[in-house]
Length: 349
Image 1 (cartoon, one colour):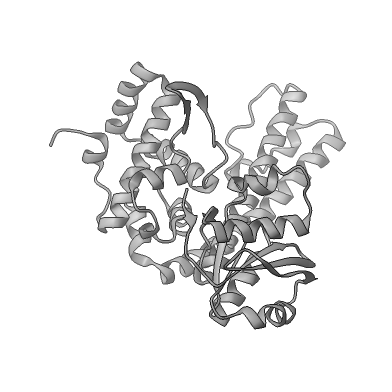
Image 2 (tube, rainbow, N blue to C red):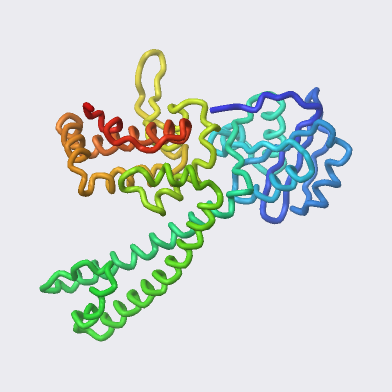
């Protein structure tokens, strides 16, 4: 975890909400010069901080409303930092908690060099990343509909399996397999919704691929050189990583991708693991999916998995390969080289 340690004449802590923001400004000695609740309007914020703009730094928690404030500070030439919400224990663990107290604590953390930093994703690629995340959300909803149809078939103990209903040509006779007209109507509703999702996702994926190619075609091509990584996983990795240079070491990157298990220790004793929710869940999913897809029709990779599974078990073996793939991606993007399967699988040349 990195902390913001730069010194400024003024420190502005903002407890930000959708319709209001509590602003606290401290001077270099720690005295409160402003402590006020204002509407979440750019003009109101700029008017409040106007006497202190020279040398001011603004900080807020990484919640869903920070985009506009970060963009406003960038446009106005004001230093802005984003705080990692899960690390800001001084706010979440206090005896009393309200917007006024939280804004003061954020300013104090900024001034004291204890403000835990999160990555303020740049606006250039931010909208595409959020649209891709929305695409993945819709794809999961589509998968839930398939699961519901399969579960319905199990409920009524259909004599024949439904087959691969993910393929459109396998769905034509599907409703007729359910005798009850109301159950048949429910399945038809699921299928109609799936077809609507198919149309939407197809258009969305093509548009996203054009945008991703325009943003960083080289890195996208490097990521797609990994067996099993197609346009969706490639775009997820591209947009969630954004800039590999922001990770000083491959260990930092692996931790960000949730590919390692941080260990809790005290006085030489181990107390298990923690921090499972700290990191990027989208990258953890992408690397897990990439490893599974890499194994399909890939005998050398399957042999490596079997070798690891005989020692660690299949679940841990997949986790090891996902971690190894994360390290490989770090050096691929850092050195601008394509994926080398022999080196990844540690095969003799």
